[in-house]
Every structure is written in C-alpha cells, then in structure tokens.
Image: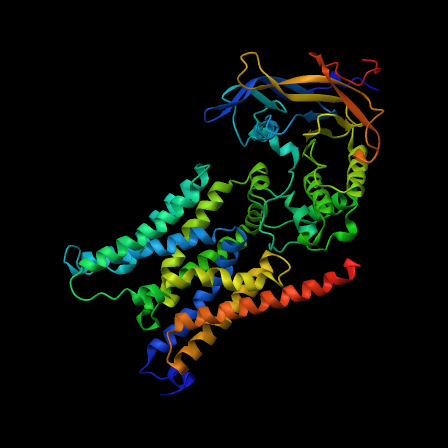
Length: 266
Length: 288
C-alpha cells in the first residue's frame, strides 16, 4: 500500500473552536486528510459530527482556528467536494425524477440550462451507482436505500475530488449497503472519501484511518478529535458494509499521520 | 339576467371582461408562483403576508378618508404592509433557530387587527368584505396592467433561473454548497409573493389568495412529472377554476372569489382521494 501520508493535504482543521450560542461544540479540534484517503469520522450522536460537516462545507464558520479546504477557505474549496447528506428534507410530493435529482449535482450558480456534457456526466454517475434502470422513475417512489444511492450519484455527477457522506448506512437495507460500498470501493484511491458515522465500533474495511470526535478538549468545554487505530474485525456482524469491516480501537490514540491499518508499512 | 357570455361582450359591462382578464392573468401567478410556494413549503408564510395586507389597506383608507393623505389608494398601503411583513418573516426565517411560527402567526394577526382598528376609525362606512373576499367589480384597468407586468416578471425569472429554483426547492443545503445564494433566492420569492398577494386579492380577496396559491399547484402535483410540468398544469387548473368560478358566480349570483376557491378545493380533494385509491391498488400486489 502506498503511503497516503505523503499525498498533499486536502482538508485541514487547525485548533478549531465552535459554539452554538452558549454551548461550545468543538474545542481545539485539529485533523487533516490527505488526497486519496478513505477516512471514517466516528462519534456518538450529539458529539458534533454534523457541526464538523457544516464547517467543512462552509455552512458555518469557526469562532477560532482555521479550516483549509484544498488550500482555500471552505466556501472557495467546496466546489471540489461531492456532498451526500443523510437525507433530504424536501416536500414529499415534489415531482422530480431520479435523473433530474442527479442532474442537480451539475448545477452552477448562474447556469440557464444543462448541456450535453452534463447529461453524459449524469448517465455515468447513474451507472456507477447501479441506478441506470431507475433513471426515469420518480424519486419519491424509491426505497430509502435507493434514494441514498441517488444522492451519492448526485454528488458524483460533478466528478468531485472528495466525497463526503453523512451517515451513509443509517436506515439502509443490506442490499443497498452492499451496492454502496462496492461503488465506493471502485472510487477509493482516485477520490478522497470521508464517511461520517455514529457507529463507533466498526468501520468499512475500505477505511484507511478513523478519526473520533467525542472526547472533551483540554479545557473540558467542547469536543475534540482523536485519531484511533483500526484493526481487522473478527466479531463484526457480517451484513455490515457489504463485506469485511474494521474495528475501531478506542483505547488507542494516534497523534500523527500514521493511523493506518495495523500491519501497513508506512 | 343576461348570460355570462352575453355580458362578456356587452359594451355596458366592461367589468365582466375585466374580471375574466383578471382571472386569466391571475392564473399565471396562481400556477407558476403557486408551484414555487407549494414545493418550497412557504404557504404559511404567504398566508401571513396576505392577511397582514389588511393592515395596510385599513391604514390607507383611514389616511385618505380623514384627509391626512388625500386620495391615497388602498393598494399603496397594501404593498407597504406586504413588503414589510415579507421582510420581517424573511429575516426571522433565515436567522431565528426557534419561535419562527410564533412570529409568523403574530404578523398574521397583528396585520389584520391594525386593519380592523383603522377601518373602525375611518370616517364614513368602510366594509372590509370586498378586501377580504375579493370583489370583481372593483378591478380596474390599472390592476390588470400591474398583474400583467408581474406575470411577465415571474415568467422571465422562472425561465432564467429554473435550475437554481429546482435545486433550492429540492434540497436547499445542497444548493448552497453548490454556490447558489439560497437566502437571496428565498427573499426574492418571498418579496414577489408579497406583491403578488396584493395584486391577486383584487380577484379572490385576502383570505382566499393563499388557497389559490396552493390548491391548483397541489392538484397538479399529483400527476406532474417535474416542477416545470407542475407549473404548466397548475396554470391550466387555475384558469379552469377562474373561468368556471366566474361563469358559475355570475349565473348563480354568488361571490366569484368564493366560488373559485370552492371549485378549486373540491377538485383538489377529489384528485387527492382518487390518487390515494390508485396508489393503494398499485401497492396491493406487492403486499403479498
């Protein structure tokens, strides 16, 4: 396995503090991700994972500290990101086809109409996610798992350099989960992948590193981020991630970039 | 009484023709803007704005009748209150993390109360009924012109920014990540809705504007494949309800605005029930 830690840093949190009104969510949170890595950001519910996502996407700004995304501010760098939300809180009667949802991934702020090139990218994204046969179906007629794959395809249609998935497996059937991780496996290495999950025990075997948000920071006010070791899991439920999983060792703490799978040569 | 179609071409009854034109011009807004209001789920906000408009109408009537500002048209007060209400609601919706519905309902009620208070103090007799429920006899040539201008503005904006509108209606956060200024989109929609509500209330009245901004779009939503076809279908349904309501209202000597809304409501309920039955039947084979 090539050393990913020698790849350029694409996302960097440097001593980030963030609060909602009087509640401090993040304290002194630092981590970085290299190009091509498959990283799991794990943490229990309420630990601040969604906040970290919002900060990466430029939807919130840190009170202190800096965030660099592709050597730019999150707002400037986010166009290189493909974001897959956990779900979309849209009007359930909103009439829209699968194809049209995926096409939204190609949108630009002042675009008037989609081009032939956009159509081709949509087609490719649908094929990657194994959705070509559902292209014309209404989005609201799909199952939860299928919808999630449509949202992944929407993110992929813009050929992002980094894919961020928020809780991709929650409420997902085993079949859809398997298809999702098969697709992510084909993207691994080419596309930087960050998966956010509340499952703190196991992560997909595709994972290079696990970052954990949940422990309190030095001043015990907000949560910070610790890097944990991951080892092949013997006791993971088989239906997880459509394949093998890794176990997160929460009693370990890695401070540098060397948090790759145990046994990897760095 | 002469039939609607004779009255339509009777030179002594220009108001009948005006009413028909108003109905057709309103239908564009009911259909196109109504679809946006429905899919963006801001019908509640539009309802608050439309009711707050009564405050502006009452204020203008009072200022005009008491001679403080002679000949102040009610529409000026209405637009002032509509834009003010839209601004407050817009800022609260974007900034507040809680109590949003309290503020929206407060604006709804305070606006109406201000209207009632001003009308009570206005010299002479003031009847709020025609503002609340619409009065097609009051539609002027200027109203028609303003409606036509707003129609054109709305159609141009929708044509130009359709992808952004679709993206932000489906998933506002994703649209924002893609660089679309969704707060601007939201505030523009809210301001246009505010002005539209003022112009549309001449046809169906303050109370029922919101029904016509949601029922035709809701009816269209059952069979539309995407937002564009929903707009076109809703436009078609609105025209149908408007003309139907005018003819029925004229023939049966009933308030036109109310007939239009009842017609729209009945068709919406009918289509809802029908689509529920169809969906159940479609699902049935899978249950086994």
